[in-house]
Image 1: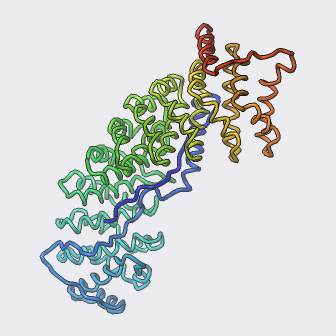
Image 2 (image 1 turned 180 degrees about the horizontal axis):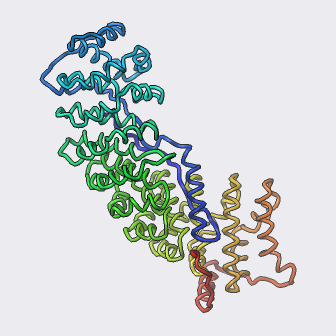
Image 3 (image 1 turned 45 degrees about the vertical axis):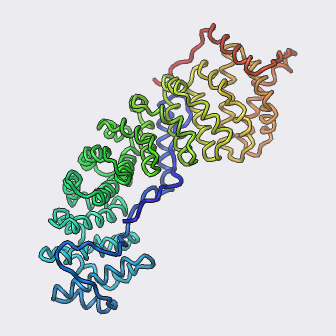
Amino acid sequence: MPTLEAPEERLRKFKYRGKDASMRRQQRIAVSLELRKAKKDEQALKRRNITSVSPDPSEHQNKGVSLTLQEIINGVNASDPELCFQATQAARKMLSREKNPPLRLMVEAGLIPRLVEFLKSSPHPCLQFEAAWALTNIASGTSELTRAVVEGGAVQPLVELLSSPHMTVCEQAVWALGNIAGDGPEFRDNVISSNAIPYLLALASSNVPVTFLRNIAWTLSNLCRNKNPYPCDNSVKQMLPALFHLLQHQDSEVLSDTCWALSYLTEGCDERIGQVVDTGVLPRLVELMASSELNVLTPSLRTVGNIVTGTDHQTQLAIDAGVLSVLPQLLLHPRSSIQKEAAWALSNVAAGPRQHIQQLITCGALPPLVALLKNGEFKVQKEAVWTVANFTTGGTVDQLIQLVQSGVLEPLINLLTIQDTKIVIIILDVFSFILQAAEKISQKEHMCLLIEGLGGVDRIEALQLHENYQVALTASNIIERHFCEEEETGTTLPALDQDHEFLKHLTKTYQSSETSKPGTKP
């Protein structure tokens, strides 16, 4: 069975900055569903069995015969089971070629109806095995080829083979059903309605070899996969206990596919997230986020990232499970795809109430976040900007001061020259929030000087001439509101020798003030 390659990049969801946490959550979900359509290759949808040696489920031994296509057609239509077996095995070998297997040719030759009949030939398990393998590989092709397998009546006989006394026959049926279910929601639901899940769950709880268990976990993940529509609620409830059980396994491939299954189930609404969280998987998922195996780390991080897009309570459960002890480390991961995913998850925590923001500060997330803003790849920097934006819209004045103390201003100013106008506008909004916070404690002049000393005023002024109207307008509003007072009033802002001395003064000034903002959640 081919090994799954760890994906380089994955699309992300995020919570949009807004007037309160509930609004950010609603907009986050709307945007995420749109964005995630663009990327399908997160996990192998289908797998073709190209193993050169097939395990024989009976004592029958056959070296196999090389046949022409016409001889294969004649053989599968013969009445002699031995001829049928030889022809089916020859067809399977052709379909198992690593390069350019003749999948469509076999379908056009009309082999599928006979292969489906062979699935029902219980006195001949070798024939069943070869037919299931051939159908597995045909179903690994395009949707058109998978449809030919389904419309040829293969699903129900394959489900019945899940209770075969011959393990290799049973395993090949699991693989075939996984390919069919992975094609999309229509065939996934076809497999579910054929009552495959109870058989798969029975196999998952039995003492099967780990190679077989990997196929079971992967097939279950395909039954959890796809939206529009999601898998039916009853099937999800059936699978969740088994997924919890598989999550305790030690094999990295079993864990990977189980985590991907859970990630698909947490992609939707809060109720779906709640179904997964209620099984108690969070502590184990957080534990797996520290895995050195990328194929385990990536889907466990994605699943927890999905969970913190849910309600504040669901996010708090993830925090209680220790997610904030792991995310700061993942921001420093050598792979940018993991940095990006961790920053996305952190942005969802930052979009919650101020208690979550405080826990984010306490866990030490700000220094690595600032490091990403300074030195990360641009795709990672964008996620870090969203985290800062959510932080500033929901944080208290004291929390914004701590954000400024972490050194966030300089990298944000440097990012004002990028071409991505959406991110530029978000950064300008961040400066507006920070300046408004400083104004609340009568420290706006000092904050203006700090931004000016870092070159921020020059860059914001230059953006007033930007070709994008919204960028130009936002920049102009900041300059007019916050950086023109000295000219209008004739006052001079005091000079500061050291930025950090100002920040200390700002903190002390705030601590002696009574300023607070209303809660971000109704």
